[in-house]
Amino acid sequence: LRFIARKIPAKYLKELDYLIIHSIAQLAEYKDSFPQQRQIYLLHHPEEHIHGHADEFSEMRRSFQGKIVTISPFTAGQVADHLPDPPVALNPISPIVWSQRISFDPERRRRDVLFFWKEATTGAQGSEVAKNLLERRPGTTLTIWCRSRKQHETAARKFPEAKMVLSLSEEELSQLYMDHSFLLFPSVYEGFGMPPVEAMACGCIPVLRPGVGVADLYARDGENSVAWQGD
Image (cartoon, rainbow, N blue to C red; front, side):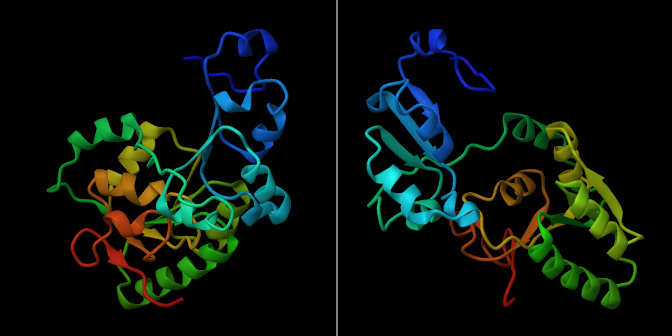
């Protein structure tokens, strides 16, 4: 098993039995340099959702001669118009996050809400929930986790009193989950949606929209999660 962060040199390709690819770009990149019959395309989400070119990408998948495996029933449904009944292999949780969960102490005092601010639109929607919560319960402690500097700056302007976090290691992320009671996850589109699963493993209850990613496979409103109703 060899992990390479860039295009695989031809000399390494000759040594491989199978090649696992993760994007439509890699599908095109290795089309003529490695037999497609020995390629496995692990499909996280249809790239046309972000980049467009739906017809071209659909045809590339339809004509692919290797094996296409999706990471969730949601993703499988998104490509069902051109890939009927693709197999599903659920994403595993990070071994680091899973191993850290044993240090969770339910008796320890924690902060209240960890708000995952992924991008502008759902960040704005989540901020309305957070503002309403702070108005009704002024003592609520809020931490905002962003994955980009731009979103980090926007969130900091809206919530100057909140604790801000950016660029975390998996160990730090595990501790962040364990330090909070709830994860506010406003995302509306996920191929899988790993943060709520990680949060649950670390004793942090996710607040999320039903039907997003694999939420319907594990989220039980009022039992292990809180369903986000409406817009």
